[in-house]
Image (cartoon, rainbow, N blue to C red; front, side, top):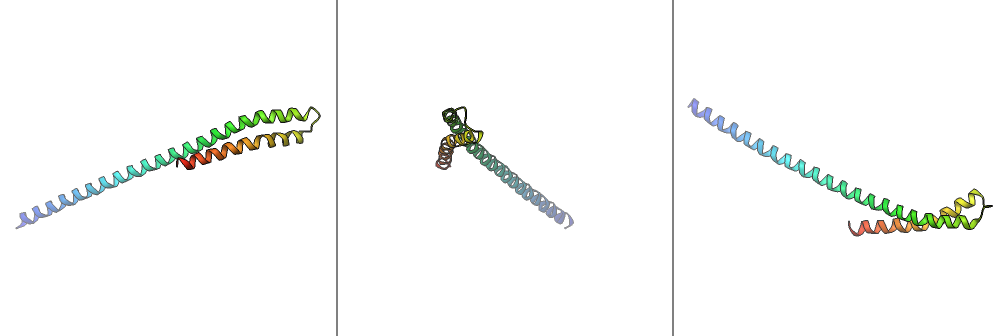
Amino acid sequence: MASGLGGLLATGQQTKQQATAGLLGAARLEAQQDIAERQLEMQKEAGQQQLMGTAVGIGGAIGAKAAATAVADLGAGATLGAKAGAVAKAMAPPVLIALAAAALLNKLFD
């Protein structure tokens, strides 16, 4: 009877080890899936930020040309404040339009 009880205990321990191994495997798989989901989310966010940065750069490039023209139209006697105002007035619309377009694209392909 003692060997029967020992065999039963050994079988129980083996079953417990198999169950533990199965749970550990499932936990490992879940952790890997969580990591993959976080990486995808980070890639998506990086892409959105890259699109916003590119759009602002394009808007800035367009605005820079308009700003140079606006400052040139003021003439050499214009104050620094007047020149800064002309630059801001010329730069703002193309930058904001490009930023709005990038935000819409991000929402469209979200």
